[in-house]
Length: 329
Image (cartoon, rainbow, N blue to C red; front, top):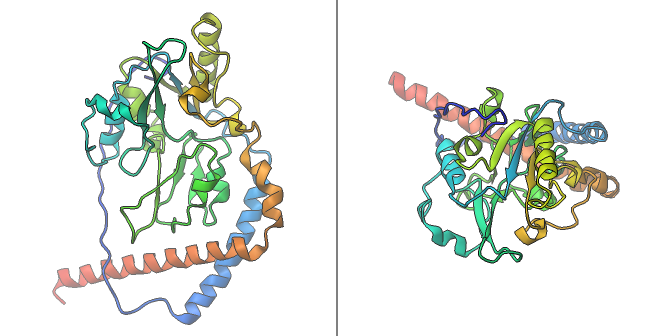
């Protein structure tokens, strides 16, 4: 549901994955050294520039946000189904109507960018609480700060997206994320990549609600400008103080997130990380990163750039081979 109460039209998706061919040629030694030196300098300079720029960055003005109200969620998993269809993910082993999935606590992975879990309600054992999990899209994302090849981007629309063609599988983002969201695609050993919710970024660019918000029949997920959904969250708590705890999760945690939450039970009972600082994670790690020898931060960037260059070269050669076969030469 969008904040204005209107439903958005479903988007169409397409695309496919490319299979790379094998060639005897590869990157030359001179090319490797040249690329490594240039890549290392670029990575170092970019890292310093980005760190300096992020000192005062507090999110894009007018960016979109999401509000999940756990008092409204009934565990129907319509959001899971919509996300699965929107992104062309494989069908789950258990259907979306199978309630047995609630017997265990699940985490998002390469087959599900969002999941819903059931938690016991200590105050009312007869009424469980359902929690939707996905990337929180931090205003100052720690994953972007930790990534040595800058595969992550905080977009003006509010989504934190990533470039799978740049990622080389170092998994620093998994360690850096205070919410333990990025998941590694272990099914893709030869194409290492991280997977996570991207807040349906293509839809955001068109001003449309993410698929999960559009599909929720209970109005538990609301889409709008972050400032507006934050006001909505405050109003709900003010209007019904007995229904909600006095806390909007994500308003300040880790410097603030684009995805906000309100609940009738303490967030720690729903598995939310406790003790997440209000300051952005970059402010807590900057002094540490400054003390780390340059070689430990530069070399991952160098190898990442080399990996990306070699992969791009193979793709270009594959296309050339395809053109030659089509021409019959």
